[in-house]
Length: 200
Length: 200
DNA sequence: TGTAAAGTTGCAGGGAGTGCAACTATGGCA
DNA sequence: TGCCATAGTTGCACTCCCTGCAACTTTACA
Image (cartoon, rainbow over all chains, first blue to last red; front, top):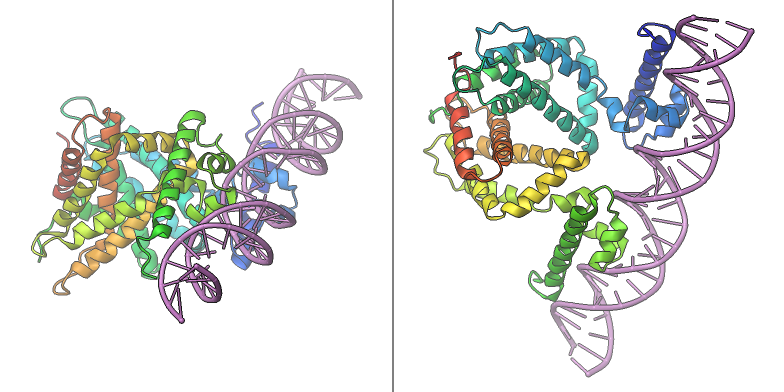
């Protein structure tokens, strides 16, 4: 064993990457729905059957990095000092992801384009985000030191994901030119301060 | 024309209802995935082809009433006085739905059971909720009277849906015995007041 | 070099969902 | 009442996603 970096593992990563690249190119050219798994497999030089050993569904090729993003969020969240509020900790975690996103602006926009035009991919992305909520809520509950009343972990987690999504929406709608971490900070700050502002 | 209540329309509603009932019974008995459209069609006394004239996907049978819920939200939201804050208006709208939900506790819990065990249905429900966000955000933007800075409609809408979801989660996790509107009110109030509470 | 484990492939098949064309029922009208 | 246009139903053929299985190939390691 101990094959985390042997030839086998390296090849596997390469193949996954090759499939992803081939697929996204085809999606761009022909559209997601019009592209079949058979075509992707041919372009990536594997058999159609093998495709499903790498990705559970066609949708998942587009959303390959969601799992990594989640580990990023949880890592940063775990690293936050216990003195700061849960909300501040959440903001820091999601800003870290926002900073990562900015480094891959084009890939991100490509994904959004596909999501906007393909119901199933969009739905699946929301499902993965719901998984983030679960993980984050658990962490928040654990972060609490059991003295005093517990924070509404579920509400905090759901709100954080909602803020992140609204921020991304805002960023994309404005042409993806502004600073994403700044927008995320703004959204989190508003939510943290309270949404119930009197009219005017 | 003018056939909104003729024999034709009545029959259509009956058939839709018959399909829904047959499907949910089968889902309860055999599970969602193990039930085929063919079986549902047989139980509802229609052809498999006809099933897809009533429901776009198998998933949609479970989520049939989402569209009605949305119209309920938008109706109540439109009816809110312009003096109250956007957040108060949102709270009122979602509490109306919460009150409706409570009337159909068992049907609602059945749906949650299916969603919890079936990824695709859960994902689809989130997608429909995202549709709520769109509709609500549009309404909020329109509600604003163009004087002063516009409210962050997207953020408000996303937060409201998140609060609703967290409230439902809380309600179900606690055995669905508490008052759902009260829980919704509590969640909205917390969010409205601001989530960024200092530790202790 | 031999052997166990991991990875790949082809095959057969189930089930969702769609387009099309034929058929049937309904609603309105002369 | 009988006729016609329209709406709804059905069967058929088909595409595609995805899965289990068994045979085969490659890699790791002693």
